[in-house]
Image 1 (cartoon, rainbow, N blue to C red):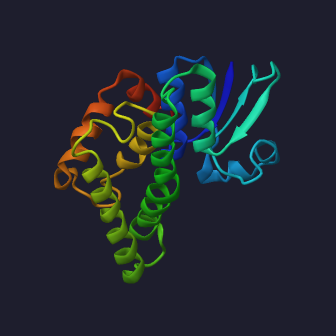
Image 2: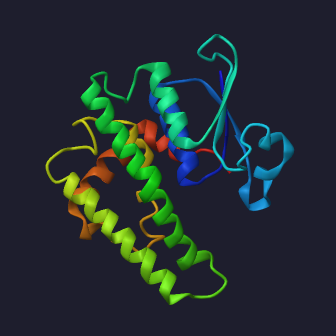
Length: 207
């Protein structure tokens, strides 16, 4: 059994989608980041960085419980545990991992900054809005070009790179992006969004 500590954010939903796709049994523990529950001592014991998600797998690699933080690392761990959504070939694996890192290093931080300046900043900061909105659209362009000649982001297959990126694109309205401007991303988004496991995972936690 896996214990998932999460909230309804793109990073949290990466892991719940992966758990659903892998068919793993898990318990959900909502961590309300709006109430700063991520800074409670009990959660900091799992993730010293005070960020969701985190997991505890009672059946770790050596048969003992293992606690993991960082959504990308959790996806790699679950792929290794189940043998799913990370190609077996070295070339395919590294192709998927580079696009996972693209999400971790670019899509998440830049989209997140766009969300902040458009939705959360106490005052409108034109420089911040322009800077991050422009970079967000550039990243959509990178994905659109990548998806123009293949169905998924990496290795010609549905992988953890797609699972990591989808929940961020699902908030395209938050960063004022019309997916019709990026036809290949829209096709990819609609295809993944229709998967039953993705629908279930995106609804976690139920609040």
